[in-house]
Image (cartoon, rainbow, N blue to C red; front, top):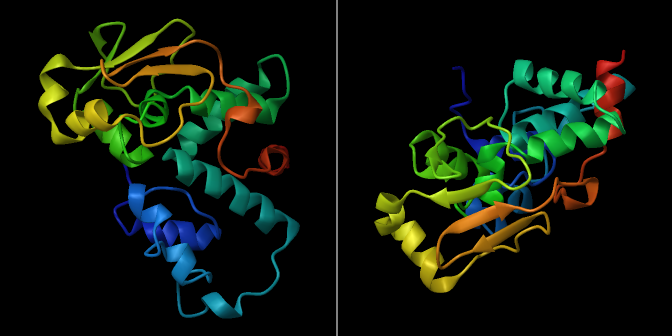
Length: 208
């Protein structure tokens, strides 16, 4: 599968927002957004005002990069959302939140979404006791997410058991840090999304 191999900090600068792709670094003074607000490239400071289409595109790219999905995957989430009851933009964000890599991140099983995705693809995460190494797997209400027993000795998970969660777990999830288990107690809503997103711009982009 194609994947971005460049500096993820460039992605944050390009979108002009923190995408929290580098874990603790994003909360420190070393964050690229704190140091340089302009887009990357020699012409970053001289960019002209964006068109309506450009604004919609940037919003779509920001969300896609934050959740780490390819364009084809992102379009599938949009298509799924349009066929669901409710508001399309909110449905799409709910689907993205239900991705297993995002749920692992939300449960503090990774410092960032890329790290949580690696934990999933490397087989460290279990869903209802069974190995699931597909990052795009959509969790359901009642699913139990846990760390593989053999993975408990990894230093990162040891620290989580001893120190507890570094970030607050959203209300649609429950976490037992000591047992390294979590549970999906409800479907995520718009209020549970922790990024600043104007999803209506994405809907307008795909509706053109």
